[in-house]
Image 1 (tube, rainbow over the protein chains, first blue to last red):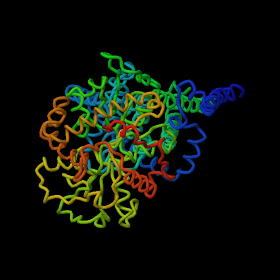
Image 2: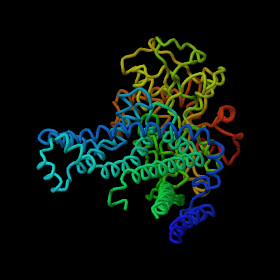
Image 3: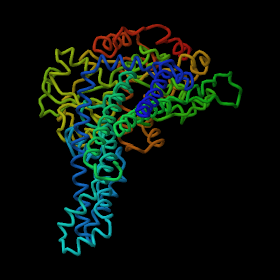
Image 4: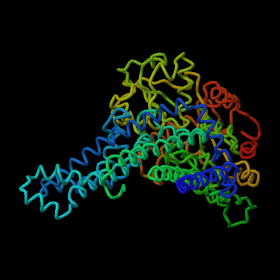
Length: 255
Length: 353
């Protein structure tokens, strides 16, 4: 019980100290900044409070785009990994393509997607999908193929067919890998969604809010969007952790 | 136990995010102070180093500086000028305030916004006497007047470039949030060409030319000109950091004098000026640079404007910009127009016979 409290208190205390240092202008002294260049936490908080509905609405746009893109991207990534597992001879080509796609930076991808899709939302989903495919494909492929040799021997000895092996052995084995991929993807999907909004032909979303406000000297407003983006990222990450904890009760990492 | 682990993990992540965001802001503003101590008296043979931050890419929009540089006007004035190109995420106000550059080119409305937030910047010259902002639509869309924008999809670059459009809409009784859809426009004209938006922002000297180059004719296009609509705000001006100018008055006057000479030459022969800019940066074609130079010359020396007055800050135009900025929400309190925010005294010295 005591260590539980301490586990929580240490980071909490550290966080409060950091905000205090920021509020008291010590960062400003060290970095030679004026409050209009780096707003203090209270100003950010009051700006956020005053613009809460708008920020929340923009957050909703960004997060829904990020989640839809992530789901589509993860699904495609998994499908590619599954195909590569079932048909290793030619299916592995898909893995190589998707890994190569992963090397394309988001900043390059966003304007390209802008040319393909006419609405900001479609462009955002397109970018996030492309970004999320690789992590899922690579992880899922590992999960579907790093099997315990004895297990696969057992499957063969009872004459299990490919599909049964997939369902009974490969799929459960891949589950921890899928969660690892999801944890990577949840962070990168939000980053990708925000960056795509820098270029999107729309005026909603956290990315547009951050860029637009920082450009026209509304620093506190820009920072409140940054805070909202951080919070949304943390909450989604924790949601994935919770689901993982429930879904993987049997796995060694959760014991 | 597991629950404790999760909550502490959550706390650690929040912390990391805070640290990360804190650091990133530090980086963007870190190069402070910098090159502000260039204003010593000129010793023969030794040039004072000055950096000029452009608002956009090297193009004929800034031809006066390039012409003055190529003709050696700055060197003659004892100045070694370094011209820094701008870009979509390079903000001249921040560059000049941080000391990355000594002198900047920006739009007056944007500068007023920074000044109102407490940034110690002062306007010290006005190169464009007229607004170059247009709203362009295909004739087939049937936008003949601002009122026809109702229910349409209209593009803007935002980031401070949207206020003339806001003013235009409000002046014509349109609500920018409910009567039409404003979307972010990229730096091409593809959205308009592909009919993804109905009307697009365009500068007379750049994007309008892109449309003509894409094969459209003047007769295919309908144009709303901010000057005609009475909502023009001042654009390209020269500004400096208040602390820098206090120590470098003479240096700035020399810079301005050489620049005005460059602008005068450029406006007298835009075709040659376009070639000068093209030789510096080949990012767009020579013909586009020349087109731009010709259009920019009309803004710097409009009809009936004395070329000897290039750089003149028209108080009435500044006031109109400030009034529109306040009325249409760019500013939350009236702009302070004083010697500390906009001053003609260096221009008067630079143009004195």
